[in-house]
Image (cartoon, rainbow, N blue to C red):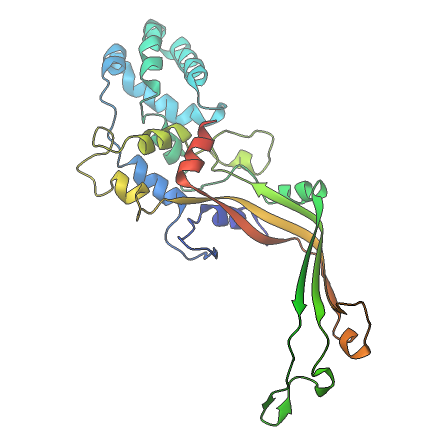
Length: 309
């Protein structure tokens, strides 16, 4: 179980390998933030010069203002761009207020928002949940009981290794019985978290970080495979990123977390008859936790389409 938010974010940041069992490796090279960075710098800059021409000598001043002030506004939408530009033009360039219309028109196809966001993060890549929220969510979690019954009817015969008998002769030719495993979780939750894209002024930990992820750019990159979006001069292509052997095919979106786990293994004859030799093998254990039971993985198509909603 991670002790810090950064340790938890590292789990979300790691890109799962193509296998049934997913094992988090903190030393693995392939991670979401670095893959996202490669995508950003492999896309063609938008060649819409209408806004730039409208702004003239004020264009670079506007870009500098965006880099410094983008992280103090909530979420990146057309309304945000309008608010940002109106604040800038009123303070620094009232004569350029008429450029707002062409700015909004080019907004959805531009990297001019995503790249400053990413660079402003200064290599500190947060997710939108923190580790202290786990306990809060667990308090509102639900109990869960899992029961597994295994019927055993064949004979058990003893075997010997170095003169030691590993099955008691007393239970040779035993009657059919059940091995029952019962696991009780006092509380269990599915803890979702996504790359930090909207400033959270109410979270004392996240307030120290800058949003760095811009979902619209991922949709823009994923939905267009040809070189109208991907630069031919770069080593990264759509196929190398999202293709069958691409390095960004899956994303970890949630942790399955539990606390208060009681595990009991018991043995029972099928007909209900009790036997002291059989009953001696019943065992029970308890762990408080919390701890991670598993992770939930989405393929990149599900992840991007989910981010658009």
